[in-house]
Length: 252
Image (cartoon, rainbow, N blue to C red; front, side, top):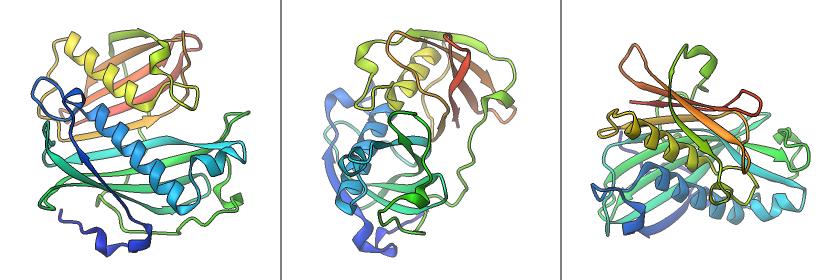
């Protein structure tokens, strides 16, 4: 799909330039998906700050944004030393979710990656979602979408039985500024688990992940895997402290 951010309200679009670093890449010299997610987080942070509903504005209200779901479609992953442009813009909201789009292009403005995402605003004390309609901030009601398909939330309860492939005792280095495991860590752990289980991790063109519950330092997350009927890979995490589902991933 050819998407031009000029289709969207240009006042809502934040565009960042970035040169892919060696430490962001894997053995194939391509940008790792978990590091792409970190770049998306930074772009979203800068965009929201510029538009008046960012991290610092919400902190004053004892709130913060957390990623609820994201779906990524890749035509081509950029490689080490390659300059890329990351464009992001808010694309609407409902009562509980704010929607945000991402577009990655190369130096010639050729389309590399598209992504759509959903974000929750949570109360920092209760850790529960807040009604976005109660915000005293200006959020757009709609916007151009980066993907043609809907972002339907993944539910690991419907995945069935899986094989345990990885276990992580959460280290301090996995905790982000919100005090919980950063969402990109779950992708990294899942790929480590696939590799450890001798399952193919190359040639992935789509990744969808839904975040279900928080995990904190010193808790343990077990990761499970099964292959879906359509050949896609399903992964999910379980917190051993309470047996709550943590996240769900679908790879295609």
